[in-house]
Image (tube, rainbow, N blue to C red; front, side, top):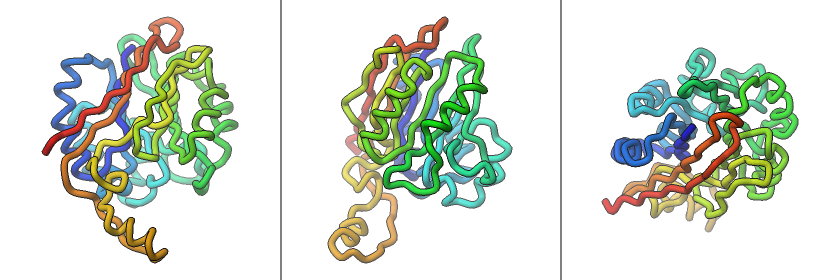
Length: 258
C-alpha cells in the first residue's frame, strides 16, 4: 500500500500549488491513496466546505486537521457528517467531528487517526492514552497517525510509544519539513514534520510583516496568507500488504520558481 501524505495546505497558494503538482506526482509515484492536513487550507486558518470539496476534486481522499479546526464555523456540520475528515481525537467528545476515520485502499482497510499534542498547545487530552483507547477499536493493521504538535520531543516520544502498533506517524503543525524520516525498530514510519504546502519565503505560509510586528512589539497583529512562489512538501510511505509495517518512507519537496 502506497500512501502520499501532504503537509499542511496553507491558503490559496497552497491549494493552487497542490493542484499544479499532484498530476505529476500521481503519475510519477502512483500512490494508492492521497491524504493531506487541511487545517490551514481556507485563508490560512481552518477549512470550509467549499475548500474541502475543491481539494477532494483534486483526488485527495481525506484530511486530517489540527488546532485550527474550529476557526471556520461553517465546517462544523461537515465534520459531523463527512467520514473523510478527521479532527484531533483527543479534543472533547462533545465537539463536532471524529478523530478516527477509515478508507478502503486496494483490498485493505486503512485507519487514519488525527491527534494533537499538548506541549504549548490547548484543549487536548493525553494523545498517548487516546491512541491506546482508539487502538482497541481498530481491526486493521494499517494505521496512519497525524500527530499535530509543536515540539520535536513530544512527537518523537509519541512515535516511539506507538512503534509497532501504528504503520506510520507523520508530524504536522510547524510547517517546516524535517530531515529525519525513518523506520523505527518495530516497523513504524516516522517524520517529525512533513512540512507545508504554501509560500516558501514566508512566516510558515503567512505574510511575515505582521509576524515581525508581533515579535518586535509584543502587540497583536492580524495574519494574512503570504504571496509568492510556493513549496509542496509530502511523504511517500510504502506499507507491507500483509503486516501493515513500513517498507519505506521518502520525503518529497517541490519548490515552484514562480
